[in-house]
Length: 212
Image 1: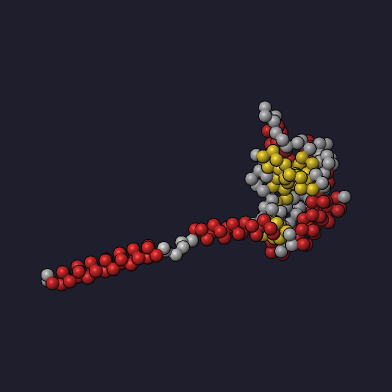
Image 2: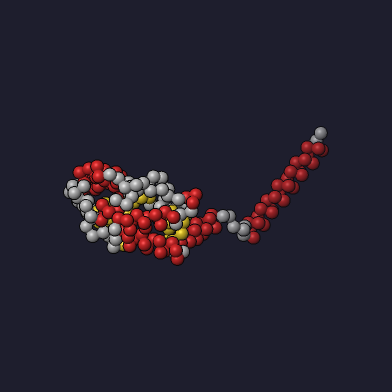
């Protein structure tokens, strides 16, 4: 299964333009798991046996980059602190981050059942992206092949439909902020003001000339 994950990740990397291609690290050694080796021995372990995240900081999917095991375990430590607070925390102990956007949003794998989840740090609405990491990567590759998923310099591989909607919104905002044609009454007002100013200037010049 790890070989299948590694193969799917290689295919995903190949979907990027050459000049924007992400680079993945080889799997971490066993010592990288530290005190979490027994806790994460299932599906999350399989993911990191395929890659230790990205070497570079380029966006991979929807603005997220693949996390290293060290960063993923640092996130676990933070979630444990939050879970210990009186109000608790909705991130389950079996969830391990595999990608993040740098602002607290993560894609996580449930080590117990393999689901890939979209998890926000400030919102307990968790979205199931796929039932396994293989299914998630296969879905990304299929969407890219169909054109539903396209490359964007800021977001990496992202939804063509959502990107088009965002570009339409930006165009609408630019159009609203551009000055439109002046109404007729404003044009007349400006014309009269210009004529009056010109007349006063001519009168002032005549008066100065006549009083030399």
